[in-house]
Amino acid sequence: MHDLGIVIVNWNTCAFLERCLTTLFASQGAFTYRVVIVDNASNDDSVRMVRERFSQAELVVNATNLGYPRANNIGLRLLGYHAKNKIDAAAPRYALLLNPDTELPPDALYRMVQFMDSRPDVGVAGPKLILEDGSLDKACRRGFPTPAVSFYHYSGLAKLFPKSERFGRYNMTFADPNQELEVDSVVGAYMQVRCDAIRDVGLLDENFFMYAEDIDWAYRIKQAGWKVWYYAPVEVKHIKRAASKQNPKAQFEFWRAMLIFYRKHFQKTTPSWMHLLVLSALLLKGGKGIWREIRRPSA
Image (cartoon, rainbow, N blue to C red; front, side, top):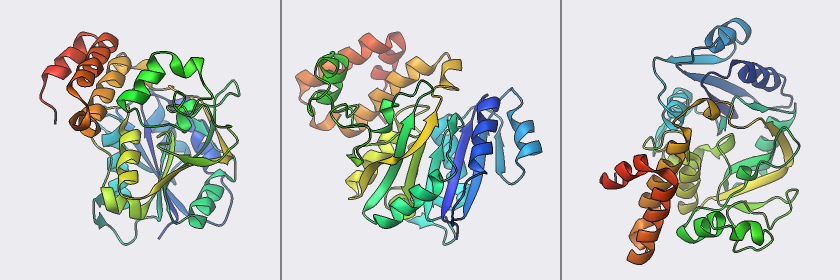
């Protein structure tokens, strides 16, 4: 049994992927790992590059772009995580979703494994992610986008009162970036998940396409009684949006994901007047495409 099973979903990010894998395979420490790369029908040199330079990685090449959660699930199943209560005995102790636009320090993987080994109550963990300009990737520690938290975030109250635990909940701006703390969700760019947590809740929800599947997974794992932890002592570089900025559907998929997440977790407990406000805000942000999604019955 390996300690860590790493899944990297790639779509036309050859140069970033090459750098990511170079740093990944330079990792140090007393742990074992498998690497699965799932390519979502890239039309650049990604597949050739992986085959020529990183034959130690397992490569899956999809004929079409299946989206982020579905492609990740392909990799997770290859590692032995099949569904809720259906995990191979040889599945790695931890699964790691890793974006191709990340760069790892040599000890990052080992230290994250050590941290989760020391905290058996933690089902999900992520490190501090640093952007190219040296600033914090705010998505690496988040609160769930409840109707109230979303209102504080998009109304501008979070920017006016960033140190408020109420108004700054979504990006946790009230907390020191160097402070490790329990959060609602980390980001799928580096999301390490305990095998037992996957056994409890299953895989990523494939109703999403490229956003919010990580928040949804964290939500379900927390509902199952596990903690989600932001581990600031480990820093990983994240270029961010290397793939999504190439996709003209990205903005629509973001708001579609917010609609799916809201319907799945909050609609039943939201008063009717607030429900109408939520749908109106989503329609204002997402446009005609979101209107079509609103009119469709929820899954």
